[in-house]
Image (cartoon, rainbow, N blue to C red; front, top):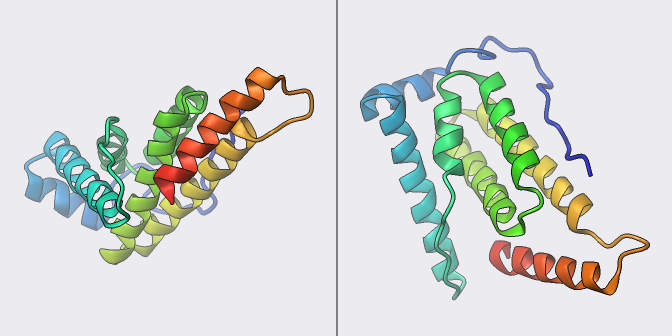
Length: 164
């Protein structure tokens, strides 16, 4: 199974350097690692609050938000590389991959809200690539055994319950 690899769709001046708002936020936070921690804390809080509003309980457990925040400090190519590595590494673990999808969605909205539309669009593209990768990997296929089908049902049930 090959995951969907992300590549840059538009050449831009931020291929290998941070966008102005990322740079500003990283400086304000006190450095790249502090920026990563701040973004992770923000995204995790939003995921928890969204789950509570839906009458569910969710506790983030991965570091995807800080991984992407750190990558943002090195430009769009670093963000794409982080996505490609994470999606290849975690597509077979439905819980981690579900959180990856959620983080991409929240980063898309975070940057949209903060008026960094191109970065928001990049995260939106990655979000849809991740959704497609989940469907490709965990979707039913001809020749699935009962065991495969049960495992895929469990994965899809978790994914849709957590992301809905």
